[in-house]
Image (tube, rainbow over all chains, first blue to last red; front, side, top):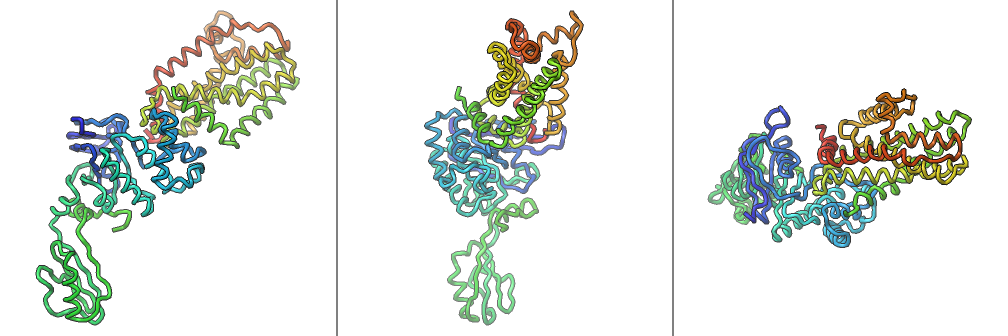
Length: 302
Length: 242
């Protein structure tokens, strides 16, 4: 199928005669799709990416991917004594892009990833975040139909993450497919069209972030800190008091984040003023916790 | 051919200023006192041949191992550039850079020792032969070791062995297989051209004697090119500990 960018069926892999690292992995990636591999360290995300990049050979199953996808692995090697722009041009020229076109693309992507001010500095002087941005610029500049990104948010500040999210969205609209391996549930939820939850080399679940979260059937949690006590009356319909102390009440309810005005009224009528209010919607981290029985600690620590 | 690997090798040689200065100065500081001393010509020819062999082998092998460890070789592989093409271009470019770095000491000694132009030219050609051989050997060592220490040991042992095969340390009995190996060695022309130049300062250069080592060198290059993908994959695996 022309629009298919990667396909795996019942894929298994083991390093040499060691234990099986991946088992029964199936995936189907279409053009313009952003697929996330979400899991803990050691769950097999990077190994799966390396299989898709053809750096490893599967020990079983079927695997088809586009030739020479753009790949950003956990380590992004650059020539430290060359500048960022030179490294970028070099990588493009190695991919067969003509010199002038490579320079134009390099300038453009250095600008997109906010590296223009540092484009002439040797990469040896770049910070981790800048090197990560340069690696991403390189991957996107190569204009391959498939991009494989391993922990792309690692070392990126919020601005960098925003640039990455924008580049991913723009690329997807242009038909570029991306596979992102991450343990950042928030990033996966915000960015990926579809997510594979990986645990101990197996797929726990596969679906859109919304469908995975919906399958959890978990309530929204609203935490309110008050001054002057908590209401004694019943909370608004559909909401339940989970815990209540003198100045703190925790409520839960299905998809109730839009009912904050009612909650505020209930608190104010019953006791007094609201100090703080926090709403926590269930997310992919909760889905992972439910299915794997282990918390997924994200970069953001949530 | 894009020439990307050539340009990269040249750029790196020039940008790494400290290393460049060392690579230009060390040959002069080490070879000039020895080559202008009163030591026997054959001994002085041995010193320069050993030096050139080590200069080329280490200069090829160690950066390859570092590139393997850093993931650079894997990165080149992932671009679709081709392991074979990368390894051959890199080895040739590295040989050319090594030759340029030895040019000052070669020219200095040629003038100092009053060689004829033909003798000096023979040394420059023989240096290229020896450096290409050493660089190819360094690439082969890099494909079979997994750490810098192993690379250093591998280069030292194989360099000394190939120098021994070249007849640099002894004179083999005529007709023995040692003598045959010596005739094929790409290191032999360097040793002989220096010994001849140091003994007579000029003398007729037997250019035809370089034909057999040239064939051996060509065969070695073809082998490295033929096995290039496999060798490059092994070097790339240095970083993953495989």
